[in-house]
Length: 280
Image 1 (cartoon, one colour):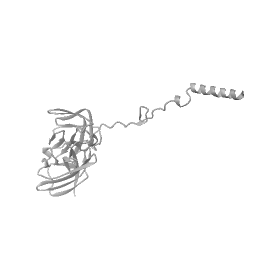
Image 2 (cartoon, rainbow, N blue to C red; image 1 turned 30 degrees about the vertical axis):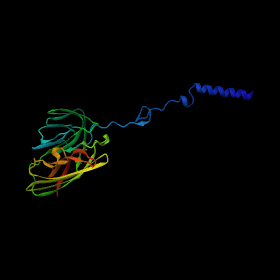
Image 3 (tube, rainbow, N blue to C red; image 1 turned 180 degrees about the vertical axis):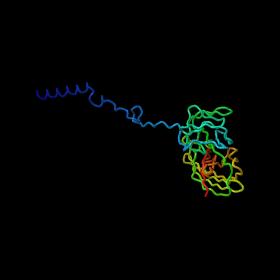
Image 4 (cartoon, one colour; image 1 turned 135 degrees about the vertical axis):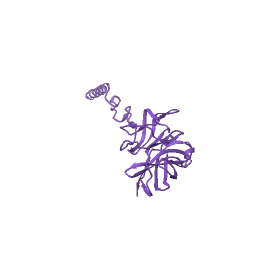
């Protein structure tokens, strides 16, 4: 009798627990933690910043400002008549008659009072013959550099150049590449010397994207501060470099390079670079 009563009591307790939601089947799901999605525990990447990089000072156009702009199937160089630079990010959004507007993103921003450089990755680019929308995802991009020409070349002197600053090179054609290789990274070196013949400029660059690398080098003798040196097949759509010398202030000079390079897999990329050079 006692055993029967005890069994009945235990069975009743189990039924009460089940009815009250006891056990795993009725447990309350854990609260979603910060940085997870839909309670699934999967990390959520924070949104990418609209702009990357920074400037130490706003670009100040001097007596003879110039620009270099590499677009999608286009390249332009010349006198800088007007520009707009954001006070907060340092991103340049107006270069003469070419503008970047809408929902914008400028990457690898760098610069100071003597130059401004970056890559338009997202926004609506408006130019004299139409518009182009950059979605921030594909390889479509515009690379720019603003600079100030030297008033005159120094007398005979050799300069030592730093390791350079680079906007990420972007894929523009040739062999197909994966979306993860639409942008890459560049390293390089530059040399600069002045004589009665002008400025002797040398630049050597290595671009890497998707684990594949390729190099482009060029040397040019530039006769006057406003001249642009061209090496290789740069102007005809092939690999090569467009070179200029600019005023970096404090007795320094700036080597500015716009380039196109073929990687070992046959894919072509383009980008811009600057090197600050000091007298030896």
